[in-house]
Image (cartoon, helix red, strand yellow):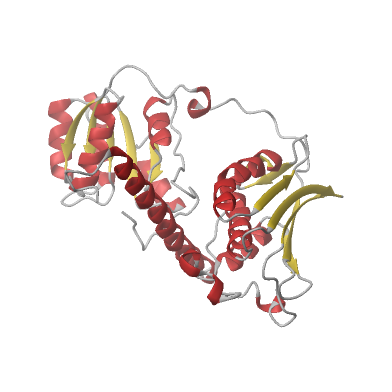
Length: 361
């Protein structure tokens, strides 16, 4: 449709929206499968920081409201006015509650109601997700958190998943020192999932906002060298940067990257790790060894995202390590950051880090 010469702007926009929705769905399936691999090898990792659960869930409401509206459901959030503070991995928590809301929307018919309520109980934060959907039989309840369990395949349609979201959610909650449970009055009578996670032991110290929060993600135009053996990826990223007013040059292997870096003398280099001829780590070391390469900004943009890969990036001399697929805001923040960040990012789930044996392009 988008290729047709007579396609109007509205049709192009509809097609683009369809592509974006399907890509998000595909990425989620791939990420879920990667998480299954991590669960079976006990490799799931958390990156804990102070988290306001109230604010996190308020964002979830904004994210899932359109899906509930489209399904003809009433989505209600009952959140306290004050912060509920945890020491947690915000990306993984968002994944847990996203899975619960996705399931509630999937298994609740049009006209149904989905309610999420946050409260405190002693030293725990308690989140209940209740729906008026298909419910569970007594025989199904013990198997809900088992791998590849589907409640009712006949109801899934095109919104179906792999049946592993609740398994992943259970493991993530347990890694936070919490617990997740489910109850249901029976088939056709809805279900309620309850998540308990320990509250932070002490109020966290306020943190200074980063570049992305202050809006300090733009500055003077930069000369940027984009290096990636995937030519389409490199060219698309270069065009995006050009639209933002930056000048760009391209290289497609390690040897070409070194030659272009020396002749072009960029302000910043966006460098893939898995390059032909010379890998990105060696390219980075060679550039840092040159007088002209000591102060320029070197950003790894790679499918490698384990802690070991980040350590190698730091040792090689990279300022920042971003994992594909990279959010544009995270890229801008890395380009204009005033200090090395070695940041995580990501399109849907920044913590969905591919294992070291599985690069993702």
